[in-house]
Length: 518
Image 1 (cartoon, rainbow, N blue to C red):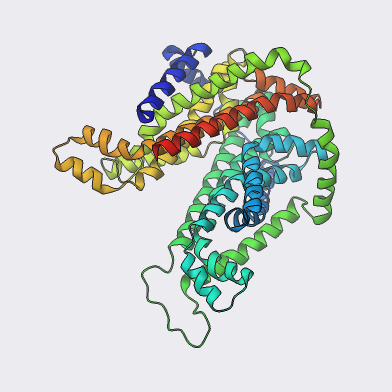
Image 2 (image 1 turned 90 degrees about the horizontal axis):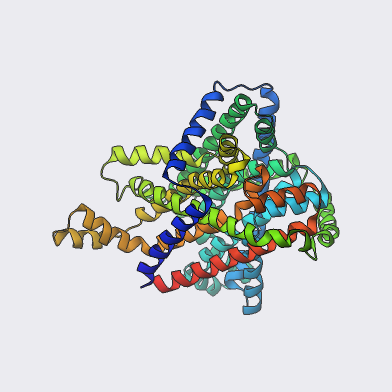
């Protein structure tokens, strides 16, 4: 019943949301036509100061590396405690992880800018704390799935708790941890572009300024540089994952002499990557000014700033919250519906296990990589510039729909690669055609994951009203942007809290549906 009820309810709510926002077929066609016209006016691209642009790109990259390194250190401790601690310790660690994941990075950024001022350090702290939510969860799951026999064997040699962790657990979870860290670095570079627009520095501020002055050719030049760097970061991440997680397989192990562990290719690669990563993190911390003294000052400033944000002041936005939340929910639902509608077929076409041939798969995969390389802030700026602020909700919905298409397609493609062949072969042997095989054997296995992916996309889009607010798309987001500029931090909290509750409600529904469909 849940498997049938969810898509029916989701499609119904998505159509209702689009009608409420005034997004129809004609609006979709006309909207993308407006974007094409804007891009035509923005060509050829220019860069008035290439040296400054590339310097700001490097600042953004250092911010992403430092934020990921900070998150890795915090998440490693919290992940181990959440998986192997006592019940009280486990609950406390999980509570911190969930809180970090539920609060968007841009909210952390606004808080730290208020606490310590404009600069890259607020962006690093924002990226680091928000990333703890994802990395802590993945780290804890990896520790829980580690083979207990290895730990018992190490304990049988007389090893203490720390030795059991270092020798019995970490070697098992290292591949999963490395994959999660590299994937998060890819995400954090895109996120650092957004944080630059709220005072964290970097290329995001240049991008927003160029669009603000309607210098579209300059904006296109900055955007192309940004997308190129995103593609390079993703390519390096993929190459490192393949090198670190795929080396040493299938080759003979060297003979073990004495009690020394032999230096295999995979062990050498892991050590080089580990020490190289530590050196890169130290350099990134130095570049963004994250010294121990600066971090201590940030902690003291955060304590002082906490009083500015709490208690929340609902009075200035009491009449706005109801309609604003309704519009925010409609934008998120409409964008998620359109994104799922386009993303699911794209993701299936990009999966080796489902695509009809390699030509289709490679074309879909190439298009998907290009789509994922565009930062969400850039999408919103382009659509708002094409539509104008009067049609801000429509522009925001279409921009988030493009972003959601890439997100859903990536997750669906990854899930489809793990499909079991048995059910598909059984359906085919019964005489089913390609459409029947897709409907029964493919979607039959993917249904729980599709539900989780769709609700995750809705969760992301609900938080995206902060992004829309930066450029004035969406009533609630615009009010948030204005109160951030006016330093009315208690009113900012009053706007954020209801959306936070809405996000937690979506997460609760998602957890319940996953347990029912499992």
